[in-house]
Length: 303
Ligand code: PSU
Ligand code: MN
Image 1 (cartoon, rainbow, N blue to C red):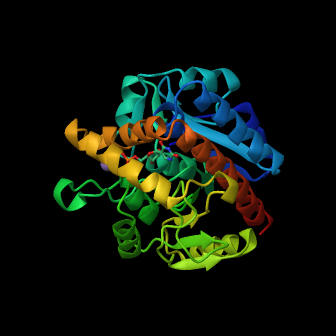
Image 2 (cartoon, protein in one colour; image 1 turned 120 degrees about the vertical axis):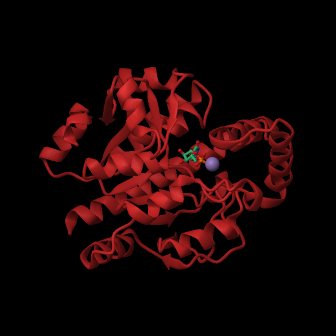
């Protein structure tokens, strides 16, 4: 397996020194945000992890290798790769074989982080059960990955473009612990609350690290979803975002957008409809998740 991995200088030094490492995904860079905000955000997220005392490992596929940590010039190149593949469990092997550039989703980043022995990963929001899934069967591979790969994913809940009650039901069926951080409610990405109660609540990174360590000791396998609400000052209230999500979903239906294109289309459309406010919120919540993920990684490393 290791034959496919290339570690950045920073990450290989961190592994040698036994430091806490936080994995970061790359689909948010290539498919989730426009250039140049995507590059600036990716750099800020890495800086946030370093400021918290951990080491960032942004993961992507380039030149037939899985990169665990990107050098600054590689990150800049990725952020300007409009043809990058959006990689999930299904296409990781194919992308390596044909030597194309690929950005890893939550699912693929979990797989690569686990190969590199990284236990904690920060992102924006996970994929989930799409609205209308009873007809389309569109359920993100992220949910199944959380069920099988032992990586803790810190996200601002699932994106509010999804069917959140069904997303929580599937996570429960799959045995994925969903831990809301510091509040009872499951967060809804751009808003602090979805109106749904999260299955579990924890108040500190130590508690969360404890849950991860216990599950590992029991040999249960699978990951955790740590649901961290967006900071209050950056949140977009439900009443504001809900009608814009409806509009974006209607536009997607009209254009027959499907499969992998759905999430990037909706994020881009909501960016337009909110006149950029959704992007500022997205950036704020990713930075916030990077801070919490770093704290959890440091607690795990102390154990
Ligand atoms: N979070 C963001 N922006 C994104 C994503 C997450 O703030 O672009 C990406 C993640 O990579 C996630 C993917 O895994 O969207 C989900 O895509 P899908 O619904 O097609 O599974
Ligand atoms: Mn999908």
